[in-house]
Image (tube, rainbow, N blue to C red; front, side):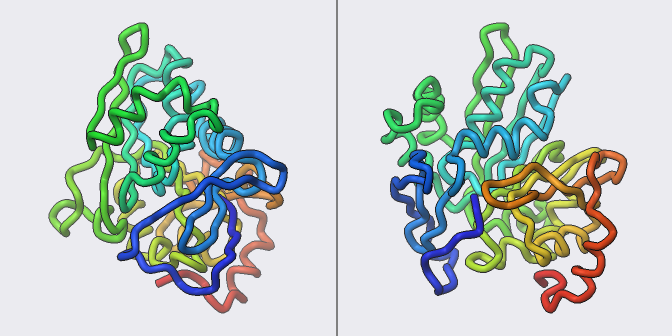
Amino acid sequence: MVLQSRCQRTFSSEEGNQYEPCETASGVKTFRHVATGEILHGQVGPWKEAWTLYVEPSGLPRARGNVVVYDLGLGCGAQLLAAFEAFFANTALTRLDVVSFDLEKSGLELLRSQLDDHPYAAPHAALLDAMISRDMVETRSPDGRLATWRFVAGDYRDTIRAPEAGGAWDLPLADVIFFDFFSPSSHPWLWHLEAMRNLRARSSERACLYSYTSATRGRATMAAASFFLGLGEPSGMKKNSTIAACRIEDLTSPLPARWRDTFLTSQAAYLD
């Protein structure tokens, strides 16, 4: 998702999410968020961005053992399906557990109705049907490995809290985080420090977060929540996206020292 908007008003979480088909500037089929006008995966399209910005950098195609993925901002399901593709192809990944957070599943429903325009999703039609009809789904690879999916519906500020503080349930700690919520300008509450700290508390020791953003205040909020910051893969026209790690040694390209000056002079150091 890129930081684009064709609408000036701030979006309210109570309105829910509705999407419509559209195309990127290069003609790739994608989706637009109706209320804000934000275009999902606006330059390169859903599959390419999901794979190159999130799944490949996360190491899922090479991971071993069990991995828990938090899919923050389910949207129309590109990252979700790309994670499952990596699981099916990587026989060393013995188990994959994906937890998706969003207000509802309208994006998945739209994707299911548009399979002719999104061939990456067509092989997963049955899986999409199961995800639309149920909030917990289990599936197995041809060699018997287990993958699970859970859907957490509602306002992310509430559902990411620990159960004793009113959160959804006792979720497993995240090893990989796909942070693909809408931009801070249209959905600032999703980037607030309290929610980011709750996310950090639900991260495993070696967890890494992957996000399209390069915005100073988005990165500053991650840093204030005790993530270490690094440069991620380019996202469309952006030079770099962001990787936030629980351990600095897990970053191959930490943010350069000059970013500190940008952080200190920012008028919105972080979203609180």
